[in-house]
Image 1 (tube, helix red, strand yellow):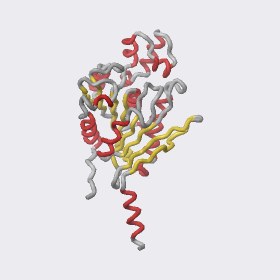
Image 2 (image 1 turned 180 degrees about the vertical axis):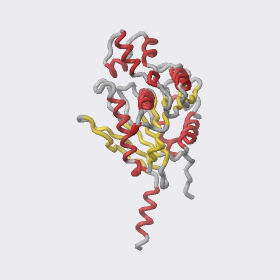
Image 3 (image 1 turned 135 degrees about the vertical axis):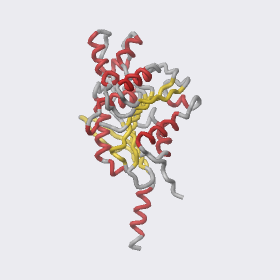
Image 4 (image 1 turned 30 degrees about the vertical axis):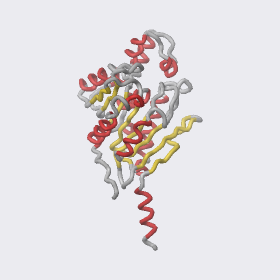
Length: 277
């Protein structure tokens, strides 16, 4: 009997589980929470931090980014999906600071979730894609990660707004900008990931649909060109005919999920999970 309890505890510890609504930071009166998926096995496992989209003004840790939960779980990654402060109540750079806080928290609590702090990939879609892109180029020390995956993300805010020839609602909400002038261009240029590309960045994987009507497809090849020119690794998965949103890709080309997992495994040196008989 005395040997039974340790064996039972080991079996429970080895089981995959989803833990929800874990507080990772408190800013003012706002509690920031995340959900965590812990794979079966002993770990430590290659790890992903997921950041949802929603135009910086809506969405949460269980919306928009949800199509990636199942493939990452089946592939044996530890993953976290996070909330961050939304605009216009919380303006730039609050959302960036929240993603960076999540990275620090995951690294500090890695052992509890079988996560490998040296093998963390940031993955975000739309507004979340922008956030992981800018955090990736800013990352130093405890906020640096091993890989970054922006999905249909705006990397050059200045050119995006100039193309629209008006102030988009998300720009007004996030930055409080209301006029097209030199001051606005300066703010958007400084806030753009493409402005801060430099040598020595972690590998990036860009995923983008060619028929995106919210974030033009050319944002990704343009960023890829800048990354490669600086000597960084930057790959691009093109979803032919894909619009804005992974949900619409299922009927067009769902292979992006398999390609993402393959890239993550290669980049993070993550082996496929060994299933128990």
